[in-house]
Length: 258
Image (cartoon, rainbow, N blue to C red; front, side, top):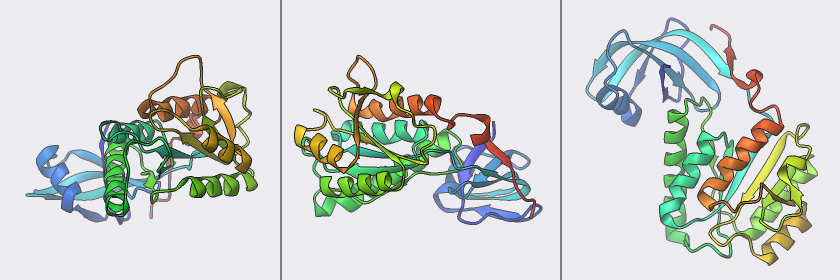
């Protein structure tokens, strides 16, 4: 399958575009693409083009657009609220959630988070998570790159839950004491889902109370306890099966050739 790269603008069919900067360097010097080879260039928001390399330089390449297509937005749209894990598991959590289809990722300073993003660390942490999400989206050939939000407090997560539930969506707080199995929930008609993952040590009783008061459902995936770095990916897989997210209609479809 053709490699995926990202660009801010996509030329029309027959047009010539250029990959420069980090994407161009990766394509030209790391992947070593050559004239005549095929690639996919996406804007990160669902639109993409099938293209052919026409010229290669150090750190950049030119391509000619052969076709355009769009990737339908998968529904329900899933936002993963990830309690900050320890540093060594932080990037793995974002990587796996992206590969499993997360539409957006919210870093959360949970009460039991060992990692602490103070004012100086928050911006750098968000930027690093975004870079990991972009790389994982490229690896899994996604046309949509999940956006990483600013660091959220527990109160801000509660407000997010309230907005989504008020709009007809669902909020699921994964917790080993949850009385409702994920497999028993009817999520097919929901357009938005907020999936809350605690850090090492899980959600505190106070956080569960606050989130359920805002409209979240305390739910459990199965009989085993998952690591914070893998829980979102496993839950996203389950949601994909329980809803229409993994149906053929969610795959890229032909778009206008303009």
